[in-house]
Each structure stands twice: as structure tokens, then as C-alpha cells.
Image (cartoon, rainbow, N blue to C red):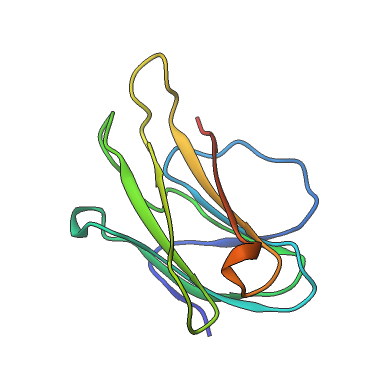
Length: 125
């Protein structure tokens, strides 16, 4: 079951990182087993959600998952599996001027255990 607003695409793991627009969400399962993933914005003004199962070795890309103004900090919360702690992450979808470019939120995990998950911000276009 896939439930989310907007478009998403699936990429095989191990491909070179393409360039994404700021505000894009990349969810990557580096393990062998499928994992249920829910990601949502913390504030209603940035209303975006993703609720899906990511197969082992797959990457899901949600282009322009959240849009924001320059210097707006967006907080994302991710839940792996059905229970556990939500993993928080802050990034700048539109950057903050010349010094900080737009950012892409990248969640990488191996299992449904929170300790196996890592959020990173990568440079967007």
C-alpha cells in the first residue's frame, strides 16, 4: 500500500546521486527486508506526508516533498515500522541565500530499528 500526495519514483540502490530540487525527500532502504516508513512535516504550514513500504535495496524519491521560503527551517519526523521513536530532522528546502543552497532531505536505513536510520541534508538545485 502506497499513500502519499504528489509523485514519487523508485530507484535501485547504488545509482549515482542525481541532482534534485530543494525540498525533495529521498528515502533509501540499504537492507534486504522491506520496511514501513512514515514521514511527515512537524508544522501544518508545511503539510506533507509519505506513508509507504520500501523494499530492500530500493530508494524512493519524492520530488519537492515540501516547499518553503528562503531561510525557513522545516522539521521532518520519520517513523520506521509501526512503533518506536519518531526520528526528527531539520533542513532548509529553499536554502538561506548565497551561503546555503537549497537542501534535499535524505533518510537512509537498514532495518525498522531507529538506531539503524540516518538523516542527512544534501545539496539541492
